[in-house]
Length: 90
Image (cartoon, rainbow, N blue to C red):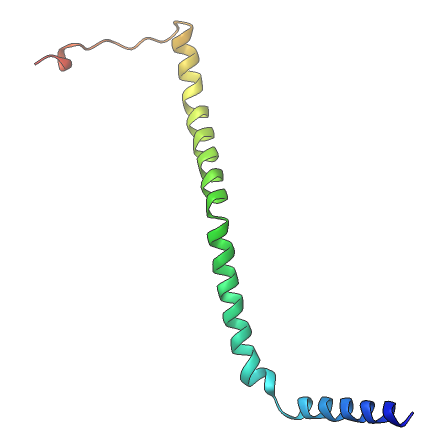
C-alpha cells in the first residue's frame, strides 16, 4: 500500500505542477498549430489529383450539355451550317 501511495502522490504532484505552470500555452500550442498547418497543406497536396479529376468531369459535363443538342440537330439534318470556303483560300 505504501508504494501505491507514493505513485499516487507523485502523480498528484505532477498534475499540480502542470496546472500551475502554463506549459501548453507557451510550448505546445505553437507547435500544435504548426503541425496542423503542415498537415492541412499535405492533405491539400495529396488530394490535388482528385480535385483535378472532379474539375475535369464537371467541365466535360458542362461542355456536353451545351453541345449535345447542337450535335443531335446536326446529326438529324435539322440544322446546317453555311459552308464558307472563301475564307480558306488564298
